[in-house]
Image 1: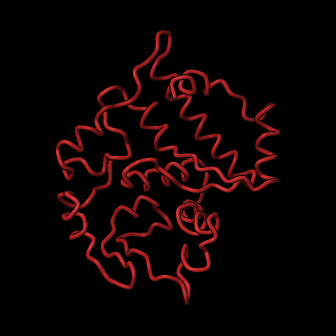
Image 2: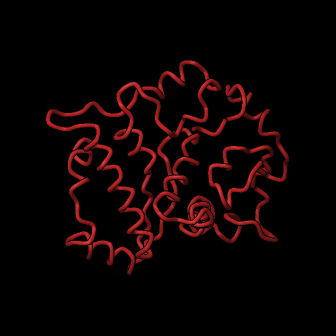
Length: 209
């Protein structure tokens, strides 16, 4: 990730070879899993800072876990600045926007613990997705990709009853997905606060400033 941090900011997304590459990916329906949240955590925070993916969970996580999340971004190589790395992250987010507008399928992933998923979707909204499009990238989109959309990925008669109920309106604020109150899995209702406590999380996440 060091080289992308240094050089991505200078890439012209509208020039060759990016232009033809993106057109080919769209034509062949090649799916992309950007994991923007990983890029953000490596390029944006200063060393020792907390990645935005975990800001809502400060004070609720086991101390060792939160300390691990405070590793901060990559150390800067000689001749580079944090502003350079942040500009490169912005260009990578712009790439996701360009891919999306071109019709390239996007699915959400994090390479993390799972806590990062909502932040990944927030970054997609920041890249021009509607909240509904961002949500689809984590639900029906992946289900279609692996051929499981006949039984999961959306709420419909005959599909698995796996979903969660949140406090808020993710159709207008995708971050409200953090405010899960009830989980339905395998036909069983589970209290989200009880699940958090069982996993060592002491309290509900809060909206970050």
